[in-house]
Structures are given as C-alpha cells and as structure tokens.
Length: 215
Image (cartoon, rainbow, N blue to C red; front, side, top):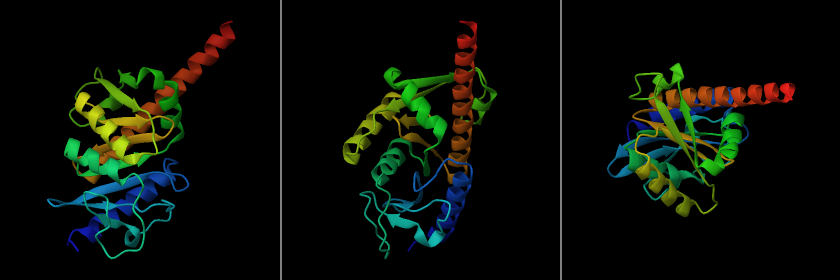
C-alpha cells in the first residue's frame, strides 16, 4: 500500500460527503478519484453502489490503469473508473470528480443537439484554472451517454483532444465531469461549474416565463 493512500482516501470521502450534502451526489450517484501514484498509475477510486453521504475512507479502493483493484478489498470500483483513467491520461489530472446534479442533468439534455453548452460573461468563470477574465467563453462539450464504458472512454478521449481548453464536459442526461491538478482544484471546478449551470438554467427558466406572460 502506498504511504499517501490513507490521506487521499480520507480526503476523497470528505469531499464526497460535502458534495452529497449539496445535492450533487444523491443516492449512489457520482464518483470520485485521485492519483496515488503516476507510474505505474494507481488511483484512489470510490466504490460502486455506495451512498456518498455515508462513505468512509476504508471504502475507497486502490485501482490500476485497467480499473482493476490492487488492494485487498472485496468491493467493486465505480463502473465509470475507465472514464476517470482516460481523463487522467488525457489531461494529466491528479483528481477527477463526477456529479449528478439536477441542473447539470437538465442542461445536458436541453443542449444535447448542439453537442455542447457555451458559458460566458460570468465573474465565476475566473474560478476555472487559467481563466483571468469574466469575458472568457467556456465551451462545455456534451457527450452521448453509453453503457459501453470502454467505447465511452474512447469518445471522451477524442472529445478532450478536440477541446483542449475545456475544463469539463457533460454526459447527456447523466452528469458533469471535471478535474484538477489536485483534489482541491477539482472540487473548486465542481463548485464553479455547478454555480454556472444553475445560473444558466434559472436564467432560461425566467426568460421562458417572461415570454409566456407577454404572449
């Protein structure tokens, strides 16, 4: 076992509980990972089917680059572990977080035909790594969901290669993925994106109601 694994596992469990408390990881939805060792690649990974509001560090798994559990643990890693591994490799990320909030799910559906959602003009965009102005335009790709995780991982890799400036993406009717150079940054990106997506969603809702009243 790697010496840093217990601390990372504890941090992942803490972040999971925080995101659950904010309504972004309800039920057993969502998953979290963090790099324990870059070469050979080892990830601390949330297990499958666990309520993130009750998760504890002992339930966090250690997996390899093929999503196989390498620690002595009977649990199964998240079904989407291969997606985390792909993001880590494509982006050089040290942590990957995936939420299932109401707003990110709704907007992934409303903008699916556009294959993405453009967000610009908001001060909160400056919370994304490397963004220094509210005039930034963030393109959030939307990828069709699939139960074929291997194929979906390849599609994600292709999408990230085409959108090198993207800080995250949405899976259609599924949820948000984002990452960071460490767990703290990945958590910040989740908070920024969830704020922005709720803002965009509520703005759409208000505009629709105003239009209806004018008719």
